[in-house]
Image 1 (cartoon, rainbow, N blue to C red):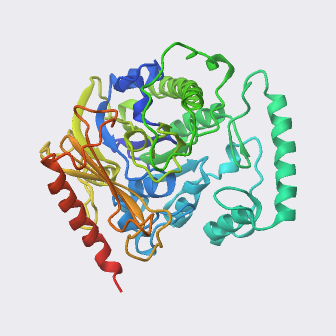
Image 2: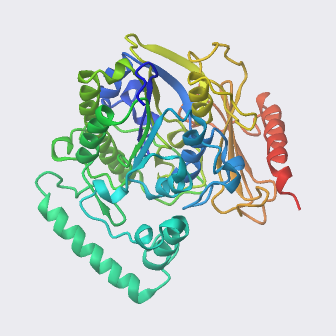
Length: 478
């Protein structure tokens, strides 16, 4: 039955959207005028961070309110530990909510398959695509994650060569033919190619139109989780945004990192520009959806949450987010939440984390917050007690075994104005690992590594991180 007194909850998640590129947060280029328009009737979190640098662990933290060391979905194509199959927002929010989800990102699809029993509507990715070559869900729907991983490793190149030379060659030929035909068909509208991921080719406009229809037709109250791929690479913006940032501005050039891919600054700047132009297109499409939400009165009876799973990097010889690093371009993501009927902007500068989203939703819907939840209610949504000196973590451990202590990983700890990063287990000849320490208040670009400079924050942060690592490893010690 519909209950109009209970607000809806609408998630709009844009993949790979770094807050460091959002003009609302002070970025040089005017990438997000529609985010800024939405901000005028929303609560804007200026220091919000994700828990990881790629989709599987980061999105799992939104769903479960836990860090990757707890939900354990920290591998590529990873899934959460089976103990969390019911410890997620789809299960914990009241049954009165109609729960719907859609994503372009097949890594998120793997996670949603784990929660399938709690979803009233789970729209298939291909339904809003022009074409797709996926077959894992068609043949092995009950074992989707394993089948998807098998399909990917057998047929596609990536971090490792494909498992079958002949079939992968046929797959590449098929994909090339498909991509060529679609790119030719849409060349006038998308001169850099059609938005795509692997075998999926889609128009963001179609997904935005569909979401606009759903918010007026879904049973209310609803929980809608819609996770769209742009501005994830390839940065194939629409014609009207091509070259809009062909300007004389150049970002600060940073020293190559020890994990650098060796990419030249000129190439990184070009990629950054194309990303920014894709982001501007993404923002424009969000603006179209915002117009629809306003016209249909959805903002009057809904919490609308605009965020991302992780960011993107164009510095230090690194492009993208498949990296061991946890710089701000990767961890700092937007979070804007519009409360039902909100008319004025609120700004929150306290440190917040994506693990805070679930406890906030539980608080708003009158549900108890489980003791295993590692987040807290977001400022301005609870009792407004902001904990001073709160510690926020980020993590990268895609090479570490799932059910084992973290021995090959990167951890980031943000506390007050400081950020400590620890790389460990990557080199046998470096058992202690490598540290970086930054003063984000005075050095927001993370240019000056304060490690071994005698800074008074170093020892305390190292001790706190070591204690946390020992704590999260304890259940996996043999």
